[in-house]
Length: 310
Ligand SMILES: Nc1ncnc2c1ncn2[C@@H]1O[C@H](COP(=O)(O)OP(=O)(O)O)[C@@H](O)[C@H]1O
Ligand SMILES: [Mg+2]
Image (cartoon, rainbow, N blue to C red):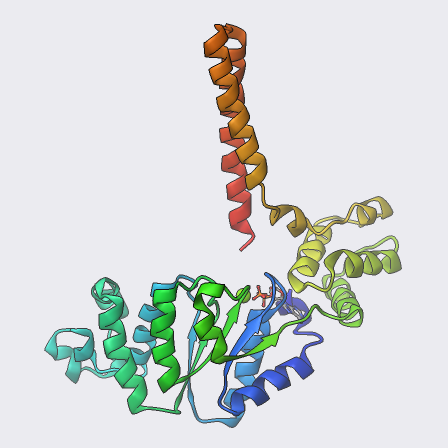
């Protein structure tokens, strides 16, 4: 959606993030999925880069250990990391950083332990203290062990990250970060997005006022929700009133947690099976078997749907 409409309604927030970052704080952008954390982070980094001569390292990976591999890879590529510290063969030391082929060393670096990785990364960052800004898109899934490694990074580089929630078991990390909560977009900004999108995509809408109002209400100002509804509607040749009224934030359904329902269903299946065996009821036994099949297949679809949400 951003590619079509541009980033709307976040100027003041981006300025706040950039200003806090210039003070040298570690920052944490928080908010639910789709609220625009990554978009605001990107824009703030662009703004920072305009004014500063610093190396910005962007880590897109969401998997905690892969983030450190990513960090090592980038430091290596910009020439801030000595290949020998990653236990690479000696001839790598004479190679200019841009000639190091990641494909050839990836497996080796992946196999290093977290301890070995940090033993290479921390001193390299230390030698260039104040020069590197690390932007890590998702710190949501950190474990306490990984958080300890991040704390070491915090001592030698500035970090800006995003997280959907601040898990209590890594609160030591959050204490070191200035939190900036990303709020929902205002109704005005949402309206502007919808109107720009309609104009750019040339959408045909029976009642534009009703349509805009519906998106504002149903999305609650969540940009991803707005995007889902707009993309969904733009598939129609013409969006009529019936379609508008049926407009729901699909994500609301997609992000629903079905786990309790599944547990109850599974318990029912197991219970029915024992009852059938105990009473010798063949029909109930068959029925429980069929129910089990249904529950298992539904589970597969649900998890496939849930995967899409991220
Ligand atoms: N202010 C905005 N204007 C237009 N599009 C936006 C805005 N904020 C976010 N988006 C778009 O909405 C989607 C979700 O935003 P994203 O930054 O990925 O959310 P998060 O990182 O919080 O999950 C992305 O496709 C992004 O480009
Ligand atoms: Mg994101």
